[in-house]
Image: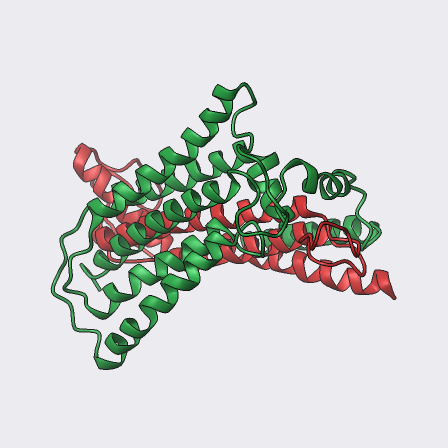
Length: 151
Length: 227
């Protein structure tokens, strides 16, 4: 019984991690990727806190100098405190970058933003994009005018 | 194809982690350092909250590193966004303005309480600092026209960070290791106890609050160039 309940907690934490990582990889929207990162972080933090759990234990706060009951491990809790703060810093930085991408390229779609960024870099460096089957260089007839964003 | 590979990878990862954690004995962690710290905290550091003893007493250097990471993230955010001038935005409306006025003192008191009692109760500089940041960010949402005091925040942030390091250096001057708790740790559970740890947490709280408030203000001012 006890191990089963523990397994339920662990599955919840691992599920959050997996959902977050899946969101990061599968999503194309930059903002959703940041949110997925936050979910994965929550799962990792839950996993760490669970690692320090003890049955019938109280929070690690001393009262009146003696130890009345077994306490949960304080070290993972301190680690999670650190991880949460660093996570906030990382998310804030990611969001500022997302804001800048949206302002510059007018989209949150990662592939569209990448294409526009590449086109801008090519235009700034004054080079034609490399030869490819989709965008052949030269005089060959093209079904659509080259240089635009193809999808 | 890529999606299928991703889903396979995720399934494998979940299976692996569940098998590993399922073989552990839940509720009986094998780490022994936690028990030793619990037994030694009352004599070593003298704070009622053992997590605070770990964060600031035993692993104070890690907390300094954590503060540096937060500082670097806030600085990089400010660098990316630049210091945008306050733009004319629609007013927050009566409800938001009245609510912000009402909430400001409450948030300030709650944040300071959590910071100052960080060595006695759950909470501390980081949690209280976030509440302080919310207290100073809320009026900006209600009255978008007001110019926030970036310079003021910068001074608070710099001075509190310097205080943290100076307290650590004082321990070094006394002949102990860096960031060893100074002073006598008084009675356990009193407000003035734990040596220099409450001072350290106050510095952490002010620094985190100022940093996050500055970052939030920059984000809020910069969000409507294109939309």
